[in-house]
Every structure is written in C-alpha cells, then in structure tokens.
Length: 524
Image 1 (cartoon, rainbow, N blue to C red):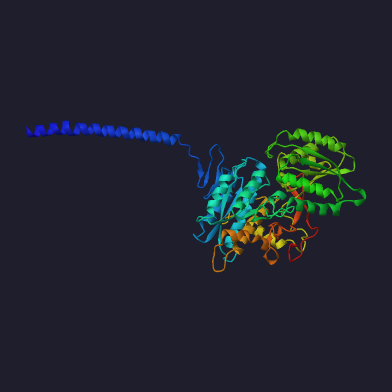
Image 2 (cartoon, rainbow, N blue to C red):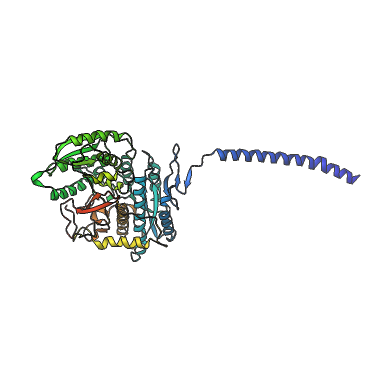
C-alpha cells in the first residue's frame, strides 16, 4: 500500500504536473525561438564585409575594407589578394595605414579600367616600400576605401577614415580620390578639414588644388597632388603647339565645351580659353553641349554632337584645331560623330585633356574615324614610353621608370603577385604608383627623432619640403611640390590615340616650356 501510494503520488502530484510544466516551457521556448528567428529573418543585415556595409536606402557597399574584399569586382580579385597577403605579413605596431579611396563599385567599364590600374600601381608602391627600402619604418598597410558613386556616398567612408586615425589602424594618409568631380571635391575638402593628409593621383581640376587664383587660405590644407593642374597641362600643350604650329599660316581653333560643366571640364575650358589668347590658335567660335549629370552615362549628347559636327564643317577652311573640354564619354561620342562628318576631305586635330586616356582600348570608340583626316592628341598623366625615348636630362629619368618595370616583373608570381592583367598605356598604373610613393615619402619624412610612427598632423606638413634633394623620383617624372602641394613643372606626355586601339607617345611637354633645373626648386 505504501508502495502504491508512493507511485500514485509520484505520477499524479509530481510527474504529471512536471511534464505539463516542461511542455509549457518547451512551447514557450519554441515560440520565443520562432519570434527570434522571424526577427532575425526580418532584420536587414546590411554588412558586405568587415568595415563595409550598405547605408540605409542604398544597395552600394561603401566603407573601408579592412580585410580581403574586392567590392564584387572579379577584376580586382588578384591584386586585392596580393594586398591581403602583404598586410597579413606586417607585425603589429610596426605599420601605419594608407587608404586608397576610389569608387570601387563603379558600373562604368572605362572607370573600372582606371581604378584597376591605379590599384595595381598603389600595391606595387606598398610592396616596394615594405621590401626595398633598407628596413625604413614605418611599414605600410594598404586598405581600400570605397567612396561610392552617389552624390553623398563618400560621407560614411570619410567618417570611418576619421575614426581610423585614432585607432590601432594609425591611418596617416588617403591616396587616390579619383576624377575631379563635385562629390570628390567635397570628399577631399572633408578629409583635409579633419586634418587627414590627402594625395591626389589623377585629380587635375584647378578647383581641386591649393594656391589657385590667389585663394587664401588654402581650401584643402594637407592636400598634395602628383598630377599637374589643368592650367599646367594646357600650358604644356601650348608649349608643344607653339613649337609645331606654322606661324606663316596660323590655325584657327574651335572650342567645344561642357555646359554647365564640373570641376574638371570647367577648369579645362578656362585653360583652353587662356591658351588661345596669345597662341598660334585664333578662336573661331565656342560651341557648348550639355551632358547628363552623371557624365559616364550616354544621355542624348550624341544627337548634339551630330549637329556640332555640321557646324565644324561650316567653319573656315583654315580651321584645323578643335579644343575639347569634356569628359571621356562625351569625347568618344564626339570622335564617333566626326568619323561620319560631311567634310571628310578636311583634316582636323582634336586637342584635349587627360580624360582621353580612358579611351585607350575603348570598344565603343569608332577607331576608323582616326584613319580619315582626324587626329586626337591629349595631355596624359603618364606614359610607359615617356622616359625610354630620348629623355631629357632633368625632370625624370629612365632609371626611375625602370624601377617600376622591375616591380612589375616581380609581381608576376608569389609572394608579390600575381596582380592581374597589366596595362600601362593609359598611365593610370604609373600615376597610382607615384601617388602612393609620395604618401610613403611624406609619412617617413614625418617620423620624429627617436620614434617610429609619425603624428597625423606632421605628415601633411611635409609637402612643401618635397623638392630639391627631397623630391620624389616618380615613374611619371620628378615630383617637386610647391608651397601649396602642387607639382612644379611636371612632365606632361603628349599622346595620340591610334586606330589600333592603343595610345602613342608623341613627346614630353612642360608647363614652363622646358624641363626643370636639376635642383628642381619651385620659385617662391
């Protein structure tokens, strides 16, 4: 009886209620887990990779990639992996960080060519700094900062870079920036306002330079550039054309320009207008065109260029030169239109700025147009033949360029490479390499006595000292900076687009009309 009573009590008093309680608890747990699961599924995980995410309202991954991440661009993968291997081998506390800031998520094929080549060049400079500098410190960690393609997509990236200056990342400079656009101008202004040194690789607009037209104080304190301003490119072009023009039969010139323009096209138009005054080219007329706000898009500008081509044919027969102040997409449309002009018997040369380098190997360009009395000459930022064919005694050297050639050979296999297919004709790899060389130079010159890491503020103070024996011997030519961080009398390759799809080096030209002296000291 006692045993029966114990069994009854166990089953009815303890086990049955206990099973009920356990069942209720299990059900509650399942409900809670289901709610959590639903919430997890409903939660929009906007992370793309460490340091990179999609801001609210955008599908574009922006930010600073602190690991191996190619921003969804397979063409970047090999060089990004090479950068990852190099960064992984750095010892904690031995390095500072340099960010390469470009629009890595661009959808424009020509822009992606430019970005890929600049990325390759920047990596080669990083590798050289860490392996070929006799143990100089600090070592260089390279990270990719995506500024995105939207008007304000650069803002979270800049905020992130600012935070990295005060963290273990020890960010000390931002290189690249990209084209001279309004968003990039705003990003450069924000970075320099935060005290972050910036090294522009391919920016050429006068509006994105210090010391222009008497503006005081400098709008971008701590900005240095390796590319000449549009004004300096136009001056170099003027020195070339003056040497080539037949003074007995002066050319008349037509100016075709972007209206309302952006920082690049506006300063190029102004520079060309100045060039025509006092040059062999006498102005005939100015003809505007209006592209889409995003100048990498086609828009309806091709229709406008068909009309402008008719006007070109209506100009006096001694008009042989067309000065083009526009972006590469519109230049391609214009060249294609000229290939179908009604006056194919007349010869024209189009003179334009460095944006024409984007048309190297451009599939949509009508190369046949360049076989019929049409020449396109432009001022390139760099060219692989510039220092190999009868180079001048100053302003750069064959030996300086050959250092890059040897690095390219090293990068054909591990541990340095591979870095993907390499192209040099557009000059972007060369200028990307030189921009990071300048960043490394400023960082290491700023290291205080007895220490190994410079302060952020001291790096930007180095730019006015980059001259004379402290110049940077770039692969694109000597980089000697004036007091505002602009290159003085920088070599400007004059380059011709060819029907075969590449670009042909013509000769070097100089903003001052001749190469700098061997001391490379800008005037006060």
